[in-house]
Amino acid sequence: MSRRLAPHPDPAAGEGGGIPGVRRAFRVVQTVIVTTAGLLGLLTLLAALAPLAGIQLVRLATGSMAPQYPAGSVLIVRDVDARELAVGDIATVMRADGSPVTHRIVAASPAGDGTRLDMQGDANALPDPQPYLVKRVGKVLGGAPVGGELFDIVRTPGAVPLLAGGVSALVLWAWWPVRRGPAHRAAHREVVDGEDGALA
Image (cartoon, rainbow, N blue to C red; front, side, top):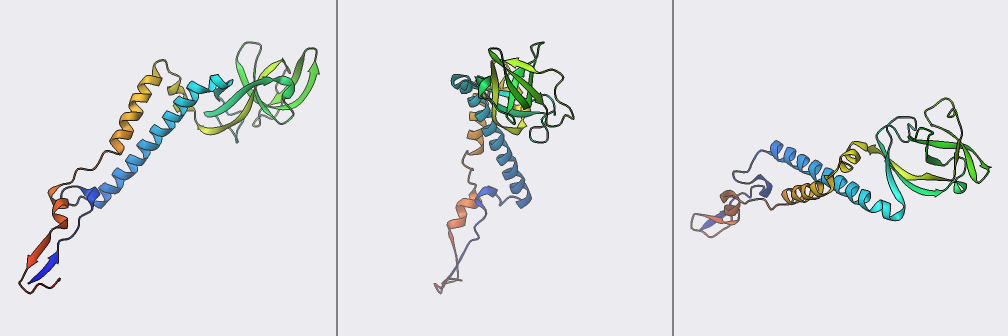
């Protein structure tokens, strides 16, 4: 009796073997969703825990710090004494109108009980028109040149619980076991053909 083994269809294909192109597209979409969910979860966690360590996340609205930090970059900023800063550091200070500006320090000197900082954006041809007299500033520890849009979503009121639930659902969906169809179950069965007992 001769026997031959039935072909083993791709488990990811489901019933009927599936279409390779469709399977690849599904895996790409799955990877993108899981990666996006992970980034959202990480930003949510950082946004929630950063203030406890005296750190905040800052989104750059303009491209004055390009090419290192273009518009939409997310920076990690720590509140420090202005006297700790040196020329070449990147810092976030407040303008007279109360709006923040993040530029590189080009000159620093004591000024009364504070510090005078002359600053300039990396992409700007000239220094800022006026120096900044400050006592404490936000020192930029690092950042990512992308992620500003996701960061805006994280800061939306009520976004944290919604994102937590959404991220959990996406990860669960992405890693949910693939349903095995009859074709997959039959893949491990031997088909008997003939009577000589040899394997084909």
